[in-house]
Length: 188
Image (cartoon, rainbow, N blue to C red; front, side, top):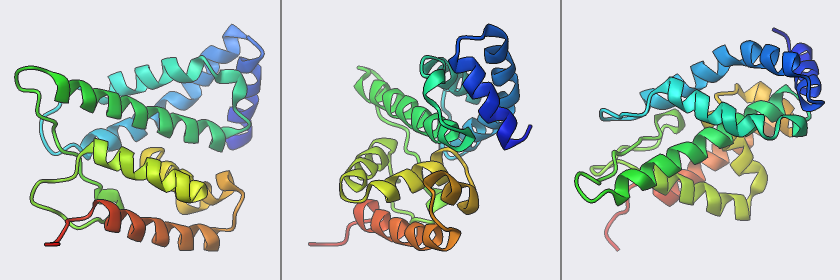
């Protein structure tokens, strides 16, 4: 389904059309499932959260705001951000459990961050992205679009209304910044 088709379905679903809402779900489910599966592959250890559950939870959250999406790119940015929030909540719940409550680490292999002995946790990633959003909101959005929503550099550039060359420079800077923030810490 093309970009314009999804945008039209988003508009129709936002107007309250149940049939359009159902068609929108059918149109985007495959891509949302692909994004969720990609997120689950990044988990290093066995996790009880499944890609389908991640998609369904994200869909429920997105459905509440279905009228607020400008276009396909905006929708998938919101989907990526929603999945990020779900993974953070899941990680916090696992950490807070009394028995066996240790977090399962998640690596940022999509960002090519150096491996560290303790692995990076999703909460560290979230905290770093939150700090990046304060300092450089566009860079944080780019990371969300690329890493959490799985968009190409070109699609992310379109979503952010910047050139692909600017997106590539921003991506390189954001990756370096994240490596500095959550990469392995040497002796002080």
